[in-house]
Length: 344
Image 1: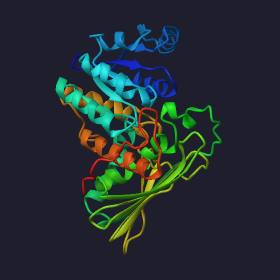
Image 2: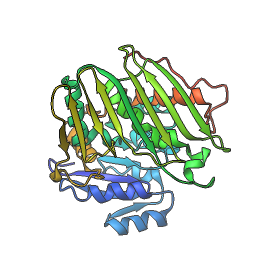
Image 3: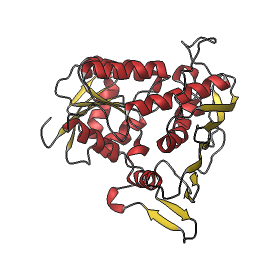
């Protein structure tokens, strides 16, 4: 790493890896120097597509490449613990896709490993790095709508997805909650922290994954959160935050919004829109820029996506799965997925 350039390695070659790499190479202070896949042919094809100099047919070779400053882990989340752990143990800094891991036990192991080796680790929760979402959080934190009373957020895809699809596959951590529900839960906890109590219901598939899930989160302050996710019905992907003195609405795409509306008692509505200078709404550049800022500064985690916050979200996801009865291979039916919830 130089004062100007941070060198990246890409671990996995799927769709999200391609999207992230495309945004990464547009950043003048980022250089993608290597890519790895379990298939050397796949790694070489990806490398040729993006002009990456080195392609590895195994993850270990990428992890041991000392010319890499940060590894972006883009595997299915069932492999995050193994892939990110391999890189951290080899001394690499890591940006790991969401959901961070399959469960909080795996997440805690990665955090402990990062702290043991003094390496940077961050979940790729790009929503937290989005400038407009950061503006919304700032307004809420500054009391623009008073004390938060309720948070609502939804994320659903219409499908239908066949049983063979990864979203229906228990071996790949399928279901609506981990793939989509992580966004509504993360949005609620961005504003209110970890809930003190959770109730949930779900419709399960024949394979045992959740087709749609709804959860009611509650905090000791008296605030409530309603979150919903689905792979059998397309939703508005809207969100709203209601306070004692007003409300903020995100009409669509709450995790990468183009606008939101602030309603304050006794005032006309105020619309906040995304700055075109920040790039396309679906750009992943903001999380990449935050990683590079932190790594240059010698930080081992980001204040925008703190590790304790990631662990708190994973505890909530585990608690919801516990309520609705979703278990993945390797998790026994009687295994206690829940950890004691920390009151907000």
